[in-house]
Length: 454
Image 1 (cartoon, rainbow, N blue to C red):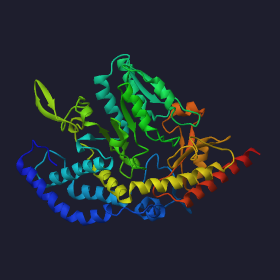
Image 2 (image 1 turned 90 degrees about the horizontal axis):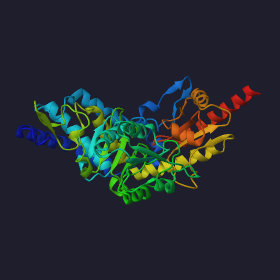
Image 3 (image 1 turned 45 degrees about the vertical axis):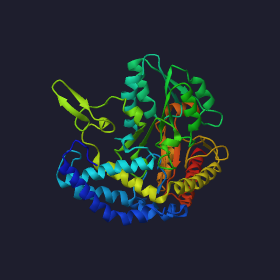
Image 4 (image 1 turned 90 degrees about the vertical axis):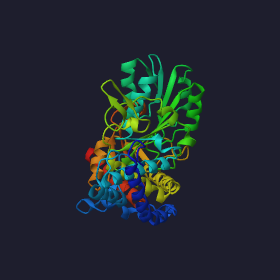
């Protein structure tokens, strides 16, 4: 998909290559995409797709990877696509007439189509590749925010947010004098929608920016209520979808937001790439953020003009191989079927919650499954034990969990947990047997510390 400013000879070459490539890939695509795998084939059924999982991290201790909320593992299909691009097609995109550049450009722009389809964007031009969700939020803050926010304007967040959805707005507040307000938690440790609504002020609130799914509480934001409230005061809505896009069907049209961000490495893709989806009518009003090659139309000694979105926001040589890997990850998850993914993780997440809840001294944060839907993760503490000690000791049994604040210090302050929490998080390759192994290791660790105290 070449830019129209390129010579006709290059565009024809692209079409010829695409025809040959599609002829080879269509049978595979039909097998993968037209018959999504059953949810019953997840877990053990896909583990062979993830070579990293087949290892002992200590002698006689198989890896039990329960840290997928921090980063997911990558299926062989994604790794192979990236390796093939590096070994056969590697060249810079958008600016070459030779065959390698054409193939590289085709693959890179095909990845944009795949991401757009994955989140049901109305146009491929609504997908901007970034280094990750953090850069995507910063892009919105530094382009839309700088252009539209004035001193005294307000941005409403929540205490649930990841630091990447707090710090960019605080930096903008220091620069422009805007006000950042925070919605609190309700009694079930979910977003207090009534409090958020009370913070919205017509003419002053310009943006509501919240997590779609919490990386600590596991709760799912009531997006329709938030969007409706924001529209009543004329505010835009940004969703941090890092913990939703990999785990459930996401349709930006149904959500009704104006911006959505996600990271590739949490959805079976590589690190160093993510995306911003933006409503095109908003994107086209936003000025560039970074200047350089790729994003310009014309440059003279007197000034420059810029391409329309998404190119306007993709200055310089992009993360080509990583974007292609992200596209392959979309293919992989589409083949599984996101409804299947959500159903499998819902069942396994409930199992994790109830098994963990039965361990004496454990406190799990966020609403119980009987109160509200949860993602397949559990952040927790054990009375009298530091979360880092827990994570260190269960690692000796091959169990990989995370400990700390999970980039949510304001949330942990609201929960009264200055030392943070431990977190076990599941994904499509996780199994009940792994949950059982984790609970056994956790119980043994607690007993060990109790013996040491005695």
